Length: 129
Image (cartoon, rainbow, N blue to C red; front, side, top):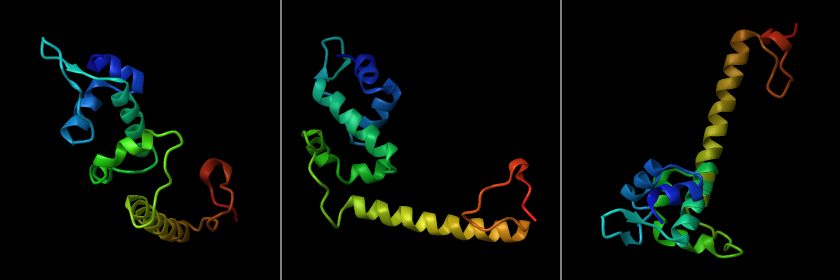
């Protein structure tokens, strides 16, 4: 199938497919006699995996590090992720970001005299007194 068909089947755009190719996440099967990229069902499955992982907070750089193993996630059921890999790294990054945002929120709430974290916001954005 051509790039537009593959993109539509995976729920993305041809531009995204080209971007994933440039970053080494996807390699089309080949080219048609007229030079157009050709994709198969395995490529569409890989695209869906890439999009799912990106939606779960992974970055393209994270996926580049494991691009040679992305096909393993197409198995039914997919294998469990082992320890010491990209998943644990991403969890650490997310934990650090949550901690940073929690500190930022507390500092901002203190400056504004707002209710502490975990309290329900007051309609209209005014702090409770």
